[in-house]
Image (tube, rainbow, N blue to C red; front, top):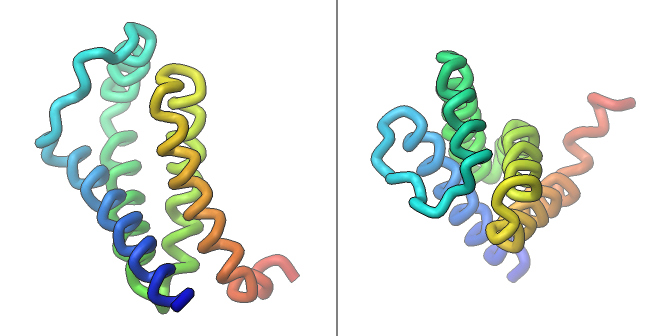
Length: 125
């Protein structure tokens, strides 16, 4: 039962990151209208660095696909972790209303990392 729950959670998590990553390339989801001015300035600054959003989008798509597959889920969790930290910090500083959802996503990412900790041991030993 635990494996089925983990798969469903990872499938939804991965699909969400694939969607967010693809949006960075194709810009098909409109930005919320109630974003604070500081957040708009930050996003404008990110857009001036022409390689940054494609890099983040690629990490999200690749990490999301790997997160869905059981064999490479540990790698996907590590690829998504820095992006997830950026999302947490952005919500913490600029849009605290989104923090509960972001903390759930961070908990899922950490759960997958803990579940796959034996796969990381060769890197740190």
